[in-house]
Structures are given as C-alpha cells and as structure tokens.
Image (cartoon, rainbow, N blue to C red; front, side):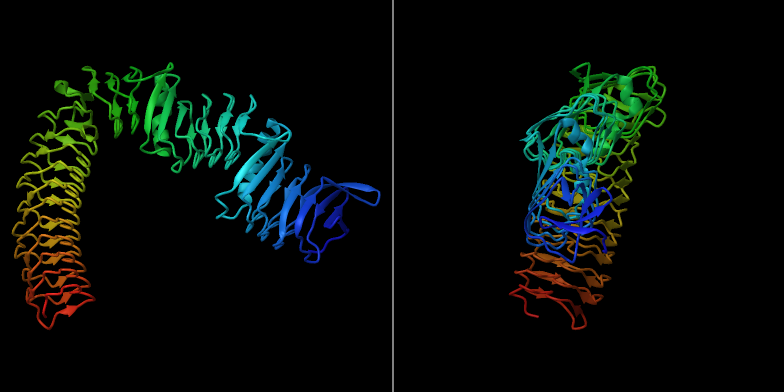
Length: 592
C-alpha cells in the first residue's frame, strides 16, 4: 500500500494523517524482538495520538516476541499481526473499539491481558468479543485471559449495578476468575460469556434475566445454575457442563405462559431440573385453575416433583410433559375434567375420549379400559418388575420399555399386531416373553441387549427378522423362526453367545451381514435353497461352528463370511460360488 507522510520513530513506521498517527507497513519491514506502540508520537514540533494499526503492519514478523499497545488505540485492521509465530502474549487496552478479521491469525498467543481503569470501563469495552471474532476458526484453545484493573489482576469481579448486558466472550478463558457478582439489573448475557472459566464453580444469575446466549458456561467449572421463569430466550447451550438447573418461579401461572421449562429443556437437554417457588423447592404441584393448556415437555426432568394435580379447566395436554420426573409418585386429575381423567385411582393421565394413556408415574397402574399408550408414556414406570398390558391394545410403540432395567415379566394381550423399534432394548432382567400370534411386525433392535432373555418364538405372521433384533442377547439359547420368514436382517443375532442351534425355514431368501457374528456356541447351520448370497462376516468368529450346509442356489460368499470359524471342518461348496476376500481366513481345520 502507498502512503503519504510515512515516518519512522524509534524503530516503528507511522503514517501521519492530519492530527492522528497510525502504525503502517512500509517497504516490507520486518520487526523483531520487543515492540512498544506508544499512546502518542512526536514529529518535529507536533504531537500525534496513535489511534490504529493498519492492515498487515506486522504480518509475517516471525521473530516478533512481545508487543505492548498503549491506551488510546482504537482499531487494529485485518491481518495486522498475522504470521507472528513467536508472539505468545498480548496486552490490549480497553480503548480498542474495532479488531478486524484475522488480525491475530496464525499467531501463538496463549496469554491475553486486558487493561482497564475501572470495572465500568472493562464492561463497556466489549474488547473480549472483538478479540475472539478476530481469531481464525481454529484458534488456541489453551489461551488464558487476564483482566487488569488499576494495575491489579482480578480473580474476583463485581459487575457494576445498573449494567444491563454482559457482552459475548466478556470473561471467556479467564482461568483465574473464581468469583463474580452479577447485579439484578443484568437482563442479557451474551454468547460464551463465561466459557472456559474453569476455576469458576458457582454463579448467581439475576432474577430478571431475559436472554441467555449460547455456550455461556462451556468449559467452565459451573455445574449448577438457577434460572428465572422470566427468561424469554435461551440459545443453544449443548456444550455447557451443567448437570442441574433450578427454575425460580415468580408465579405458577408464569411457567405455563412463558413455557420456561421447554425453553430450558431445548437448550439444556435431559438435565435434572428443580422448581423453586417462594424460596422453597416444589415437590407438590397443583396447576392453577386458570390454566387451559399444558405445553409439550412442560415439566420434563423435574426430578424433585413427587405429586401433581391437573385441574378441571385443563383442555389440552402436550406430549411428554412428565418425562424424566423420576421421583413422581402421584398423579391426580380432577373428576370434573371433561378431557382427561385418572380413572380407578390409576395415578396416571388418560385421554378420556380415546382411552389413551399419556402420562404415568412410578405408582401407576395400567387399567383394563386402556386401549392406546402414547409413545414414551411409560417412561416413569421403568423401575417396575412386572407389567401387564390390557386386551385391546394393538401395538407396543418404539422404545416403550427401552431401558426398563428391572423388568422381568411382561404380559402382552392377544390384540397386539406390532412391536416397535427398540421396544424392549436394554431390559436386562427380562428372561422370557411370549409374543402373541397376532403379531405381524417386530421392529429393529426390539430386544437388543436383553442379556437374560433365554428363548423367543417369532410368530407365524412375521416375515422379516429386522436388523439387530436380538443383538447382544448373550443368554439366548433357543429361537424358533416361523415358516414363511423371508429375510433375516443385519446383526440380527450378533453376539448371541449361548445360541447352539437354529433352524432356518425353507422360505428364507436373504441373510444380512453379520447376522450370526460371534455366535460362539453355534455348532451347525443349514442355509435353505433360495438364498443366493452369504454376506460379509455373516458367521465370522463363530468359533464352535463345525458344519455348514450350503444351498445349490448360492452364487456368492462375501468378505470374511466365515472368518475365524476355527472349528469349521466341513462345508459343501460348489466351484461356481464367487468368493470374496478372506472368506475362510483363520479356519485351520477346513480342507476345501
């Protein structure tokens, strides 16, 4: 760039423009060692305040080791220090108003100090956010920031009363910050405001806070916060480290009108929450008579809630309002409610018109008049050891009993026609289940990781054994497959280590990859006519497998199909079969 009035003062090049001076790049000059940019320079008889650093002024100065920027500097333009690979520490004055993109790109800065004359000056400066925005996408994650006020580095900070906004990244990476006071005047906290403050363990957020930015607590030492029901916006906070949230209610009605818990749930998913009302943690909640609508997830993961009362005036209840309320013991719907009921003291919420069970607690009973169960409605019954579904119910929904760790016995009615995906996945105490002959479809992963399940009879109307249907059922000894079965999905019986034999019906046309992978007790298998391919790793690591009967219809065996079947001795294979890679690798007794 061509400049007019370029002068060199004490080793640094400046451009004089009227009454101000700016540090400039001149003749590709390379700075090294230690540089101080003063607040003003004197040229001839005139004194000029130094207000900025121009684009690429220090770019590529690989041997520049330290830099001091004096108060009064207002801007640093793009790529001003780009490529200063030995610049590891930087002090910025609070007078800075603008730092352009990439100003500190490709530096080695690990320590940032910000100098201010007062708390108020630092809060107003927004310099932390300016610095953060100027860095490249992958900047130094180990950078630490130091706030220096009147010559003293702060570990405790008092935000002045009357402050309404805590700016983005204002305290980000302040590793020495251990305490902060936020006045009730603050209504907005910006993105990443306390991110990386790993020594900050507690924080009291203002009661009238209305906006909480994204990733405010990411990488901090804060694990518990109290939020007000006055909140109007919470941005994405997935990477936050928070494990417990208290919700301070100004009134019970406010929670429904603001939909506070839903907003918190979206920003902090699946985190334990507690309601605080009049300074007391709520365990019993009587919904006000004025409430007509309860929104989706309204009380989700409120772990302290033990009792809830639904008044007569409630006309609509959203989905999963009580999901994750693990302490809930009692649910009561007012007898005057025309839309919902808790019939026969079942401690549940039933949609009256459709007889659909929509919410439960640990003490709920599924009464005989129930005809439908809403998805995830039984999530709070996960401690039950025995469950009986009444006649008339036609399906077991996706994930209905997933993770019910204590479930030993389940009674299914003769009206069931479908079992959803992951319906019983992870029921580690379930030893036996009788599937009614009315069942036509069983979803994938339906019994995955039911590690005590010993036998299963697939009903005759089922045509497909879906992917991972019995994967990880390590105690499974017996499976009966129906005539008419057409396909076995991928990983269907993977790691069923106690399965010694299985009869494949003549109707079978397809077996998925890894279907019998690591069935370490399986001794023999006969593939029926009609199957034309044995897919990748279908029988790999079946170390007790000795005999395999192959059909004349077979045209291909894919990679590693019988890999590590170390007991395999006999397989009737014709020369026309197309073999993949390592099909019989580590089969020492097989003589083809």
